Image 1 (cartoon, rainbow, N blue to C red):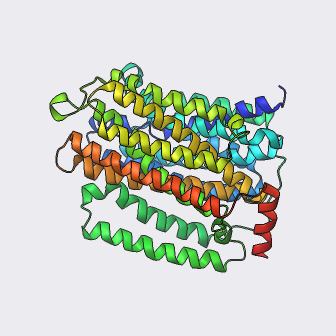
Image 2 (spheres, rainbow, N blue to C red):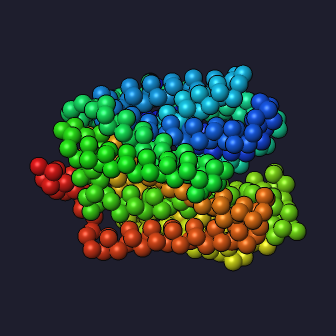
Length: 467
């Protein structure tokens, strides 16, 4: 098989699709899992929380390992772990085994930064931005598609059978990557200080667990507040350790460079908005008309989401061409603002499905622009031997943002009614608009104060600052 840029891109995109589908696949399946194992909704929800925590810890850690020891080998090993998790999830005899399987699947979150590094290593420079846009589109589409397809697919093959789809993608992606992708990039120097991943794990777990379960524990309960205190203390210790370490896991000085930090801050805010909108839109579409919803079936609600998926994929695949006319920062700022306008329109006009289909299409376009351009800015803005950890941090911030968005939206929407109210959804979507528009303004304002330099200039300037 040829090692052309097109085949390399296809191989990496197929592999990434395996984990992209798993991001939200379990969300519609929780009631089925709860029923089969005879457990509470709180216990079944750990199938989502376990994935989230594993992805948050593994993404920067394996990104750094890839930078140090080779991205291709790390990429293939990670896909193998995901395939094992898929198989175990399909066969899990108990909820505990299923949660272990979800942890293994969550480790696959590291595929995202590793994929961006492989693209920069393997492709000609003029093809990198477009390729990153396509893979970013696959990530976004997979997340939304997992939510849309899980319900209908489980009706046909059962909830266990839904894991076969990402398993096939993982096996095929691994085979293609092994054949057509070479490990040709530069590697970082140093080692991994085991203390850094340990502290990272502690503060991420202590933060994400209460964000995911705080609504059930109670936001002012000692358990929730205690977890947040542990997260704050562990985060402070991790920052001190990273700043003092000779070989930090995450180079915080590089992450705070003017070319990088606005993008990371915007990714956090966009992460809040993304899950709060598309994660809860199906539930509003299925809400009865008596409660202010549109009263659609699961199948029809999925059809309403199709314009969002089309918008997201269309702009993601076109970002390389758009970059000839618009800078990546302009696309990021414009995409975030478009997401905000679309969310606001959904909040103000949502009585008919077509109104939400139009809002979803605009949100998908904005999300595709934001995802694709933010990854491109990070890849172009850091030295080649720091791509894995830098893009891992960026992906992690979106993950943390998604957790915040999920927790906040759940509290707003279901705080007064078990199935939600139209006014609750509208309020949540207005907050989505505020967060995403703020992200766009932030990126644009910092951009006007300091234009983005060429990649070589950024690398040279930042390395000089670190010297």
